[in-house]
Image (cartoon, rainbow, N blue to C red):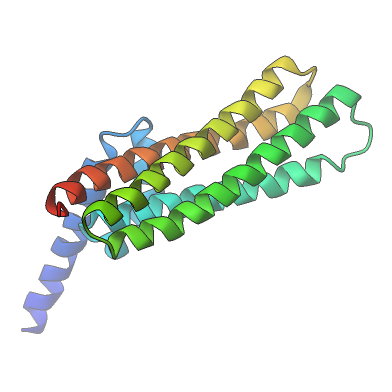
Length: 188
């Protein structure tokens, strides 16, 4: 019996990773999706809700890390006025993203405990807020495109914010997948 259990475990883990890979195949940044979510496969199992929740958690962690980095950058000495303004604007956008993603994670949990119209309402909130968080990241990137920023600081902030935009876009796609699968079985 012990041998059968040992053999079955990798098969389960493998099927969980395959679920993550197949789900990530429909998002905008599939390789990034698999890279960041496959490590959570044993917790996700084959649950679209757990997958969406994990994607939101990853997005929140990336947004928080980026917000902290941008906050430190705002304190650098020798910034030009336009650089400082772009960094402060980006900090506000990232602060918004963090709040929206944190609320989205909580709201998705509420959706999972709901049925019918309540489920649709909670999921709709999540979709709206995650979309807004993605827009905030894009707005930050747009600010950098127009500001007179040069060098490593611009590159560092831009790459971090771009990553937030990408993981948030993926999270929205996975939330949408969950909503379509659960919505059909959650009808009143």
